[in-house]
Image (cartoon, rainbow, N blue to C red; front, side, top):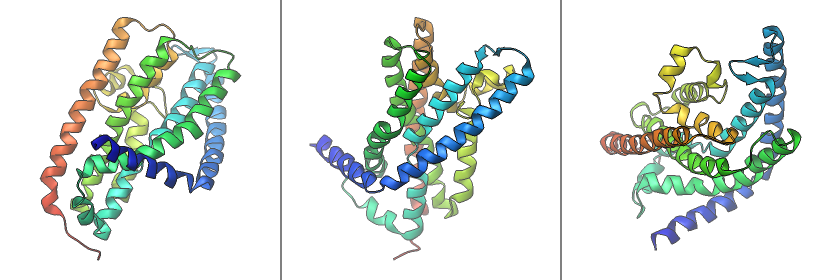
Length: 267
């Protein structure tokens, strides 16, 4: 019965996402422009390096990584922070809390429909295009199964971080600056902007102990490795699972402790 309630939110999310088809077109055009800039930027970096391999990655490896990282970002980004912020500022949060479903679950399943839509319209076409253009540079085997498990946990970690940042709006009543800072930190330290292989050793060691690398770097590492060792798989997925549980607990406790801060500014 509970699953039926969740799936009804998923269905509503898919219908809502399909109502804004033009936004997908704009997003695709924006991504193409971004990837063109990325291509010339990294082409210049490898040209100046004077070698085909930098930090263990070729130019092709780096480009494939960054293209798929961009596709993953578009697929997993749910704008939960903005939704929480708007609800708090308008007073709608009070009505949401009266719904017969925990707010954290309600918000997640409200965005689940957009996950499915964006996966089919953005990530999957990008993945297929890259696989064809690179003539099999992306290995297709057991790594795809590991990638799926990894992405599911990455979505959970990303959502928990968004929920924590959104909860801060209960104290600040303004979310724009905090959310921009969050996006910069996540995109940089997760490997979505610069592959972690290019980080200095000390910084890379520190980042490996943070949850951010489990959002983009972990899934992409498993995807692009055709024959990952058992140790790599267990370490990567195990680390993600630990952060998945830890961030979920932290976000729930922080939300519960912060509810007393609610003030209604809207109707």
